[in-house]
Length: 345
Image (cartoon, rainbow, N blue to C red; front, side, top):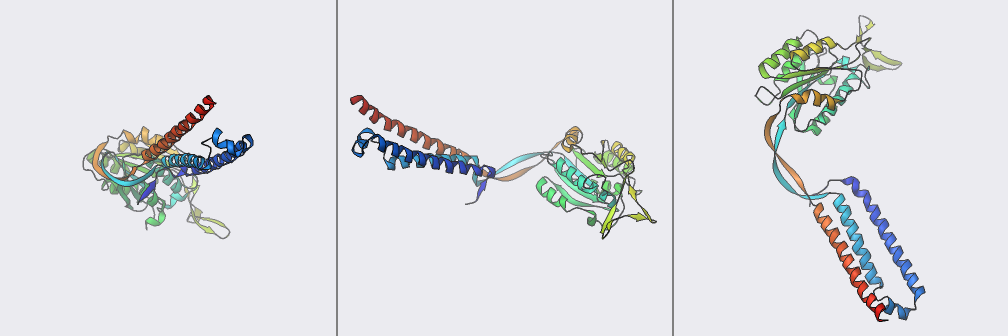
């Protein structure tokens, strides 16, 4: 049988069951010892007719099974499959991730590229029902992850992304916007957004015109998030040398990369979106999503057919209540004969 545990963290409660059993057994032994001191063996059967080991052991077993059933309910044990159609509603978001060498600059921790991956992951956590895709770009652009609502797999593939994904250096933001336009699944002119995460460097690819055309022809809104220092900037590490780090050089001088916020602001204005100057600071991507991107009009997607396990916790709760009820009735039944004996005496 295929069984799934919905709340594995509750498994530690089994230790409380073990402790409860030990306490009940110890109490039974102490009670038997006290009874022997109270009366002689021939009188115990008359005074306490229901104090036998067998009855007491059955009570302990009943209570222990009730506790185990409660733990089973907390574990959210599931088995059996249930197919159901779930309507999907949301927007389509294509992330454009800059993987050029300038994104390896370390003015953000651990570097701009890793910070960008963290930000995409944080945004995916609040994008319930939305489809997400990924385009990576440097000297050229390509679709890395097709649009999907499976955000877990998206994050796994995102971890493998880096400068090695493309064989041409540089940063052509306009080309990335044009590639992203072909990634959308729906044909209607709404519910589409492009989110660009970059330091803003561009090598004459006309990204402003690309963003304007994407909105005018397909209703795609463009949002830009700038990473990196706008002041002095940061050097670009290229390898680990034996006596320290080696940094990218041009004509014998080290290259310093700075965030170009002006072009990112113009791209966002051209695409009827918004510009978020993250710089070197940590930003709340969930808040950014709800403030800016979620304002894009949603649409109904095709219904998803979901195969899910059937929760069985009511069975465990019912079993625990039944066992506790039986124990209560048992105790009540044991008490009546004893009370009658006291009254008769």
